[in-house]
Image (cartoon, rainbow over all chains, first blue to last red; front, side, top):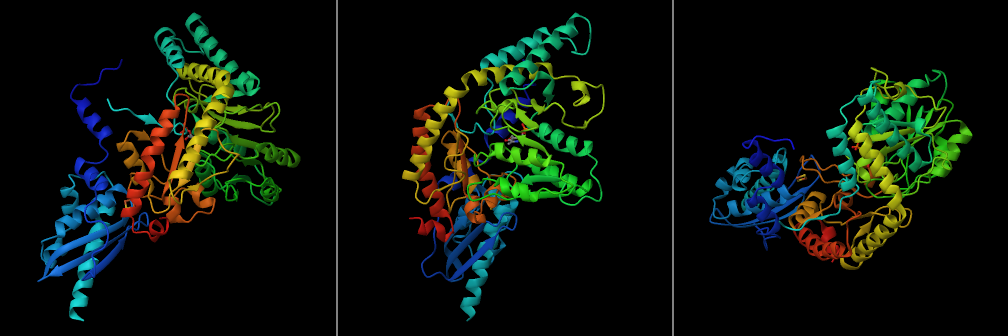
Amino acid sequence: MIERSEAARPEARREQQDLYSAAAVDHFTSPRNVGGVEEPDGKGSDTNPACGDRTTITVRLRDGRVTEARFRTFGCVAAIASASVLTELAAGRTAAEARALGPGDVISALGGLPERKEGCALMAVGALRAALVDAQVRARA
Amino acid sequence: MERRVYLDHAATTPVDPEVAEAMARVLREVPGNPSSIYAEGRRARALVDTAREEVAAAMGADPSEIVFTSGGTEADNLAIRGVLKAHRPDPDASGPHLVISSIEHHAVLDTAEDLERHAHVRVAVVGVDGTGRVDPRDVADAIGEATRLISIMHGNNEIGTIQPIDEIGRVARERGVTFHTDAVQTVGILPFDVRTLPVDLVSVNAHKFYGPKGVGALYVRKGTRIATMQTGGGQEKGRRTGTENVAGIVGLGSAMRIATERRDGEAEKQRRLRDRILEGVRARVPAAVLTGHPTERLPNNASFCFPGTQGEALIVALDLEGFSVSSGSACTSGKTEPSHVLLAIGLEREVAQGSLRVTVGRDTTESDVDAFLAALPPIVERIRSVSAEPLSASAR
Ligand SMILES: Cc1ncc(COP(=O)(O)O)c(C=O)c1O
Ligand code: FES
């Protein structure tokens, strides 16, 4: 038997067993706000250029605040979890606040994502921002 | 501990306990270098020789035709680079130097690409039909004056399709071209006899038949011209120099012997379990697409695409429920390029994204399969319901 240092062991075990954080797994297995808002005020999509996967988000706004956001994602675990958590983060915020949400907010709300999954989180952010821009354009029209 | 059901035997197999024991004994008790002429060295040499006989016997080869390597990747590299290095092609001859298929493992595909880019080797890539089969006539058509090597795999690691290597080999023979086959997924699993198959070089990999990882072999038919890729102390008759991985080689030899003894019974048993998966999935998962050939396929391989799903999501969801399976497009690196194999059989990118490969093994039971068949449909359903793809709507 090769003895490894006690200190190194738990770390290695965590890395090996948890590809995704508990929060990311939860959002993946029980995604919140799946689907589309009925008669949305804004709708936006984004594609992750690395893989071609796609997220669409629809929003409803009242008095400049996001009252509801829903998503559909064709993509990986990180993409689904990111979109799911982002719809929660967006709800209740002003459109400006929601537009300021970035991949860092998504990743920290999920308790981290595996390396090189930033693009998947960014896709959710891109879809939400596109939906908010769409809402703004429609409101002006 | 939670119960795990391992259904990824094409990726690797657990080491047979008898093999592990034989290897442990070597590590504990055989300190010698096989090149040394004193007692410890002779003992190590004898073990390497026995393993060479075991591997040769399983394939109908002569022991002198077996070269030990560090696995399938090195065997493929040695075969391709070694043969092309040994045949300095006539610069004026026309046609490709190397002919491969579009569904080769990366160990062949990327080696060909590397040679094309850095060694001016001309490569022809022969396509496959929708089941993943190469047409031997296409191979014949691809051969030119300059062609020195054909490398076409036996069993495909993703979709399980088995190539008509006997016919391809006959084409190669008629045209006087050396023929290599990557038989990493078949040797130890299906009968493979170089006395009847017209093949010149064959890649073999221990960890696909319950041996250790990091050890394999290349069969090199007597008279085949091949140059070495590495230079050094001259082991393996100079064809693969470096002090032998004695324990690994012993592991390969005993795994090969055991696999051959159990081969026919296992193939039969695994085929039954595999068919149970194919039928179960067809019955329970709407719009499932079987990938690979319906009959000419590895006995342990069931592979599918579920339109509207994505490979990594499928794998993680199944992993959470205790099942280990894989996907041609699964990737945790944030870049899920669909597999070249799935694209080569003509699937659309989005369909290819949702691929799943289930490969059974010696320890797989009917209840494992049934548990998998119960777990899969709701997972596919859930991922489809999240998916933005209209495909998921039309599937239900
Ligand atoms: C068909 C085929 N060729 C080559 C290899 C490479 O084997 P290894 O990575 O063990 O060197 C594999 C293993 O996945 C394989 O399935
Ligand atoms: S890999 Fe495609 S979205 Fe994450």
